[in-house]
Image 1 (spheres, rainbow, N blue to C red):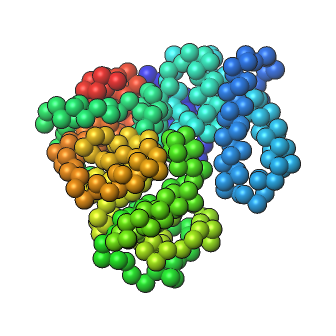
Image 2: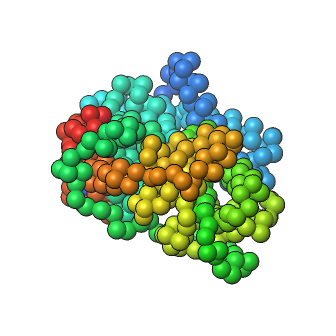
Image 3: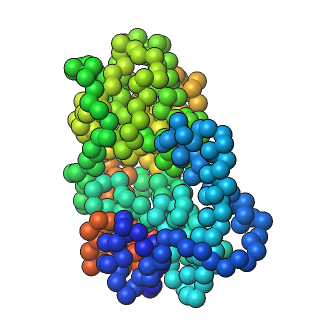
Length: 375
């Protein structure tokens, strides 16, 4: 099987590992001037808007100015149209290849995905895995968009062979780009841990139906603190996002920020984790902690997490937290199946000799995960 993958620095190890089985596609360029179908133009406009929104979140002082946003939108749409045509030209000579699309939400990968779909080519969406030295690779999408079953009965029925033996002992280490929290001198004895997420990431922009950003999430936590007077909350802003919300929100004596804390230790010391759809939620399940999810999460399954689809539901669900019985066997089955079969044992930065075999098995649906899940 042959693959096509964007020739970027982050993909260099995968391209090297795949060798002759992979065609490295330049990540930008200008194609022909052929006319585009209206639906293709609309999709390029949608991808452009995603990028504009991302810029507005990451560089608000510049891109929230309407004239600058308009100019950038016009420029980016023009460049995206050229890049789409270029990708289509690069892919068309051999449409039997499987296109490896990293994430697929933002350009240029979103444009590569669009070009592949336009040509009727098979895609495999790849992304970093939920645990170290693993990757997602799925024909449907990543995270909550993947083919991972969301039916509790599926996990209850898995046999020991279908679950696998390995258990993830390591969690992802996250180094913070934010300054240390000088106000934080110690953690409360009992607390709910709230991991913030990157507001410009697809997890928020595409998979968070009602929590729009981290200020919104903080305000929901603030409402919980006001109603549940015995509860303390500890927030860790996402290490990869350099803009803090601390100067934009009303502080509360029972809501602490701990940006320099070790995530695993914060999970382990908590009573429960409240998250939109962060990988930290799955890590919490792995460590035997109760979890409340607010967005679309692949692990938001009955018996594994509590779920809240709006503010009122969050208040009701939170009130039941202590009495709720988490299904620990279902949690264990889920983690084992995900770790042993759904995630590929691939390190994106140091891909090994099994890369082609692993990706081929997933693309052809002949590996253990595909056979068991019937994806």
